[in-house]
Image (tube, rainbow, N blue to C red; front, side, top):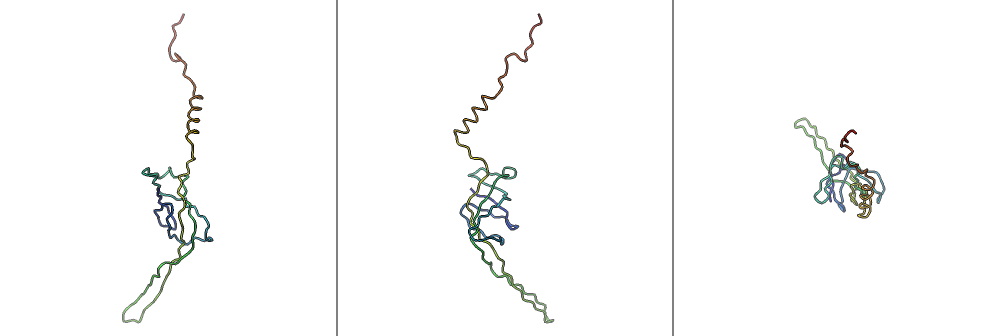
Length: 137
């Protein structure tokens, strides 16, 4: 089972046990986090999207923070002496994906059979000849 989640303006394809880098999220290590804007869930060949994901949740655990690669910016114009140096390192949060759930209530087979039998028992029986006309006497 995998899911496509949206976190920090980016989309990530995740499955249980994956460790991903997302934009910086404030929180202590070992805190749990829920990703609710889920775009797609594939459940062993059955793909769910849109309204099917109303209750779907991806749960993760914060592992810590780290910094990405340094990006160097250098502006230069020849013959004028104009040169500017700038660097940037983006901070990321590491998240371990623990669980992907569709949010459907779990039903046992016995509960399903019981619900089906009560539906049959409460159904109104149709009366025979309710729509048939009787001759006038």
